[in-house]
Image (cartoon, rainbow, N blue to C red; front, side, top):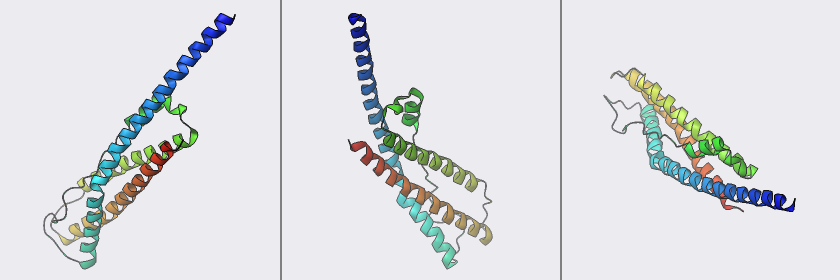
Length: 173
């Protein structure tokens, strides 16, 4: 009986060690993915602020343009990666983390998913707008850019704060 018990204990210990190793690997992969996503956001945040501010300036001053305005170089939204989180959820390894860390991960990855969906909607809406050189059309596009870039900037700044809070939570023991 003692041999059987010891066999179960060793097997259980070995499985726990494997699970702990998998959990460390998961945290490392999530950190790498979030680092990539953070860099993507940082690379476009200033441009989106400029788009927002330029569109507001044109609206406030009544300045007109023909064709594409000089400040516009595309939407440049980013598609944020979600694969590490999905893998952790599918394999159940996420459940090995402390509850507060799971909550932080859920908040950040939920915000990233919302960002991805919102940026797709913005691009789709822009593509479906009538583009002509009339003042009415230009003003409609400027208003759309001012509003949508305001929302995108808010989402991007919120994500950057979320990345920092999550990093802090994972660095705490």
